[in-house]
Length: 253
Image (cartoon, rainbow, N blue to C red; front, side, top):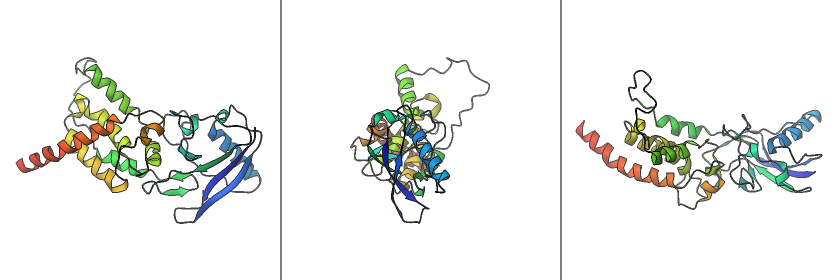
């Protein structure tokens, strides 16, 4: 098959950007989207051009490194799929495909399709660590965890931090990502010691980079792991509680 590509090219964070057109010939339907870009880059290098810069790592839908706006959709038209898992059989011969980086002020462009997602790292760092003194390794079933809580925590922990939720959100909000990171710790017994401090600090850092959530639901639709909107409700509930509990603890000190 043959596809026409309109790719966003930008030399650097402060450089002007724009779309450039490329043709990908003899594309196999079994190729992943990133393999197709690899093929285009090989042709660019051979012809003396500059390859297209894009993020990738594991290419197994686990690391969260890949992330492109494809025809205006985060990760492309196939739901529950990271960009590296999207295959060219999703498209038809002769299609024109528009490829852009994540569009968010919280994710500034580094070059071409690669963006700086260090804001997510800062949110996670703000959560600190769990300081429960475990001593030697406990027996597997020593700490009882209700199955409902364990299942919900595992669902939230599936977040790979790709940033599709931010890219898809009209407000550029990161509540789904932050809610997932907070929820998977706050639901478990081991996460209770710093629960309120963790919640307030992570949300405060999130607000420095991203917009506010208005519950439109685009984030969970674009999420390749299907993180549910409930994690945002968990975040909001715990943040309100943290405002009172942390102030009370401060007053006691």
